Image (cartoon, rainbow, N blue to C red; front, top):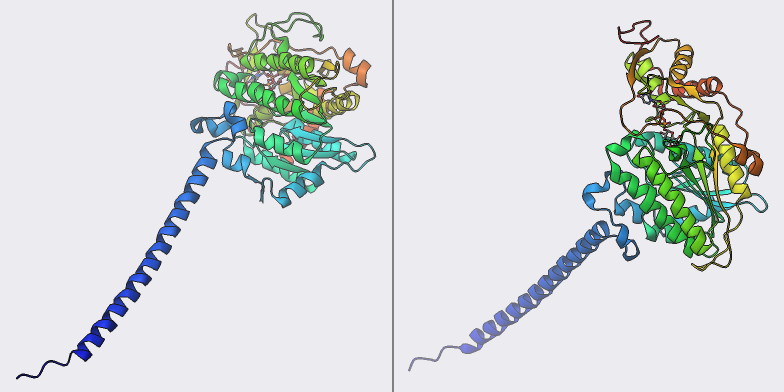
Length: 457
Ligand SMILES: O=C(O)[C@H]1O[C@H](OP(=O)(O)OP(=O)(O)OC[C@H]2O[C@@H](n3ccc(=O)[nH]c3=O)[C@H](O)[C@@H]2O)[C@H](O)[C@@H](O)[C@@H]1O
């Protein structure tokens, strides 16, 4: 008989093999579950990020800016999560917000300045900080004009311990957070879509900033406890086709000539509503063509300077009945004094947490220079300061929302807070040109005395 095979060894081997197989399958299971777990985590993170970027906070749903239209607004990622280098709502962010907003003088204000990286906003922020008030800036750094100029203004502010939060007026969650962190006594609301003629190119940006953004800010302010007093920038353009001269706050403002003017006028009406329903103290300031160092490159005095220095021709508008166009150009330092005067005399809001307790202050003031200057004269002053002849191209004013002249009566602002402009156009432009040349350098050699046949002298 054949000897039976010795199975003990085979069985041992099989047992060993099955043990190894089990071991492998458990390892495999472990590895694959780990892998699955990681993939799920990654998907979850991607989804969270996707929703954060694409969907605004619930409270902001009504003001959601569709992604395609964001170039003049701000992405929600940078608006809602990050500001400068710190995370919005994080401990270091809150510390910066508090530090910047804390007044350094007895009974000093704590002011939220919107549009703080803008022209008037940066000047006012510095003036407030210098006298000991706390200032927190808010700006969306949009690209209506060169954002690097806004960043340069922000750098200047940060040297004076003013923190500018990178965010949009339409971000209700961000605004509410700011009011949670700081009990602001005042808002100086200067953020806006400015410029008269650009309204024909991008009308929606005016509605978004000057109407929706303003309402969003007022909604947050009325709900705050304490409610702040609000001083905000209206515009001389609300006088539109008014023919009274000079313009007084009592004159009609129901004939705006541009959508820009119409949104500013709408702001004045909206201010009335929030004052009436919620007891918010509101002061609108009608600025008259403000100019000066750190100004706005979209304004005529600014781009005339650039074009004259580069030897390019400039368009000088005349009215349809061949008259000169004139503006009550107002120097920035005078306007800053007006803004501070308005803040100093602003009474407290009377409501709290969205409920009115009694009547509150509602005011509107002209802040002009009281001395209109024809645009041709502005150009001659610039030619003198730059030592260069401009290539002047005099044309009839295009139908683009412009008005033929502006002239402020400032009696009311003088009576209520001593507003008295002291800078004439020649002195103010001298300071502007000094700043301009220092900031930009002289970009190209001025070309002298070359005029076209259709130019005036
Ligand atoms: O006072 C105001 O409320 C307004 O002042 C300025 O608006 P505007 O007065 O039109 O200022 P510029 O655009 O700098 O124009 C100044 C003057 O130059 C004239 N101009 C403008 C452009 C141009 O190419 N040529 C020209 O002759 C205009 O007709 C105007 O008379 C600001 O741009 C507005 O944001 C502000 O609200």
